[in-house]
Length: 338
Image (tube, rainbow, N blue to C red; front, side, top):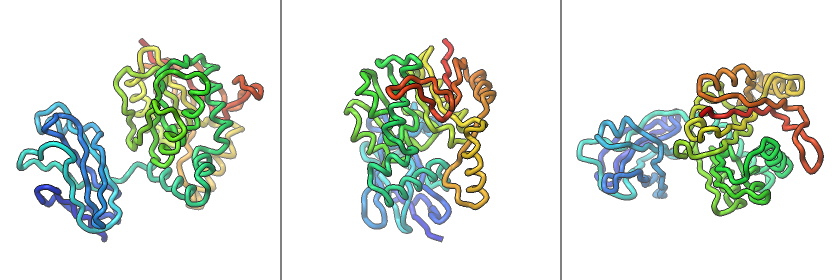
């Protein structure tokens, strides 16, 4: 057993133990009482290094306890046994007697662990450009051009406000501006190395943000388009449904979701068979999930989307400079009902 001991950094209050051999993170919540807004916490590690963690996850339960509008949560992955001291970056301490940092045993979501481990391995083996490409399936420029071509084919206005869920290393983001895009862009992903790669190669007005939960850091009704390429292919069905509900929240009426998915078909059989073999051998690096169109239709019905169209993964209907092309994964276009 390797214990991380968590205590409050300013008043020395002991909070609890986290067994880092089984628990994957220190989770807690904080509130800036001086400015009445979300804040950050500063964590001093046993090796004396200092880490600042934004407290941005909504915690309405905390807000209710403290009689304030909203609380905000954070997570931090401890790497060593020993004492971790935590305090606010700004503002006053919490009222005396209120435990403002909670050491909780939580397991990080499977897709976070899977993809952070995969990307770490790729960056250790390859040069950054190649690793960033392989992390999103390879053929970085070709598939980025194909995603832009799909958006144009579907009539997406290049002045739209776009949220790119699972943006990875910026395959789509880097292609938008050269194709006349003038709207706002927010890209989210679970892997910080890929987000850094995308940010460095995208316009400075583009925003990228690491998100580990099934949420989108955007206001209600703030986007025209949400793109979701190669995300639902690696989530459980209930996780995809939760994410779709969040996409409905951030979309304006008549806004659309453009998502890719694996469906059971002959051209996808090798993916399914390879996944089965890796599962049997215990070498599967991440989930590969197949979704039937009926499931997407049912989710849409319950969430308030209309299914505008499906495009089969092997349907070469997308006009490109190289001629008509297929997306390889199937596409669903969902429209938020007014």
